[in-house]
Length: 222
Image 1 (cartoon, helix red, strand yellow):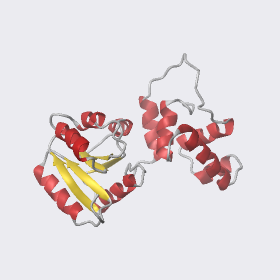
Image 2 (cartoon, helix red, strand yellow; image 1 turned 180 degrees about the vertical axis):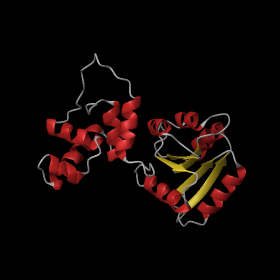
Image 3 (cartoon, one colour; image 1 turned 180 degrees about the horizontal axis):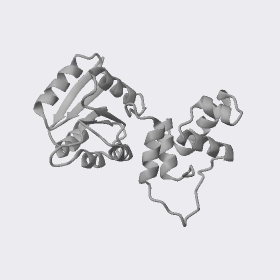
């Protein structure tokens, strides 16, 4: 990485004018370097594997490979964080993008500052989902998840009963303060339980926990 560069970025969009404008916006920002551009999904996957950027700004609507197909092609490249750029997205598409490995979703109508903030957010290991709350993402996941009423078995991944209660509260959208009040605990104790949960499940933040818990049915559905 070039000295002073904190994020190497690849832009994948089929509109040359949009790519050119985005490149100019990013290159005046300290610490950002645009290392490549792709005009379709197939080229995006090839260039990511070749250039190994830190961040890919990926348009969902592209020729040859769609954004979703490109996300599948990028599976396993842990060093590259993908932010989906889109003119519009519904909740089902948002959940689909997250499940395919996207770390963020940014609408093209967003301000430059929102885009810059999203890049810094995913570089810090977090998710960026705009103004969507964790709870709304969870609800979409629950709506889309297949139901197996005859299968009551549920693996707890070594979580204690209290930790399972806290996971359920996180899935329901509770804050640490809410959880502390709900179970008559101190916020410090809640944080301690969450650290234990993160370690046992191999997740690093609340959204990853929510996605894991929903996919593995750790929290009961209403």
